[in-house]
Image (cartoon, rainbow, N blue to C red; front, side):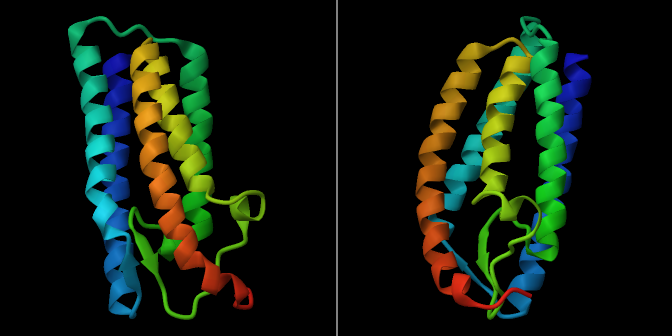
Length: 168
């Protein structure tokens, strides 16, 4: 079960990167601009290290499935799908600012700011817990919080002028 779960997550992440790359290229071709590119390698390093640490845990034979966290992770994945569907062609792993587009205010975005980051925070905590590692959950949650605090400040700066545009 451990390997199936990690294989699912790994393939899911690769699929998301393909979607993000396609959306990023399309947005940039339409005149959008990327901001905050300087912190993007840290985000990639964080997520790659997190997934690598989980694979090492699984391969060590010390991973033990904890079903409540697996269920929580499954709920987080449903939330991720809702986020991605709500953003549609605007969903990327980078901060891409499209020209003249209003801020998305539908789906989970009408309930709270940055729901994608809430989902990511849940994923980074819950998957290690699902494999029985409180240590990995705490370490990577702390690192994620540090990177996201920087990223959210950058993203908020890009969203401020767009918040005044009429909804589409």
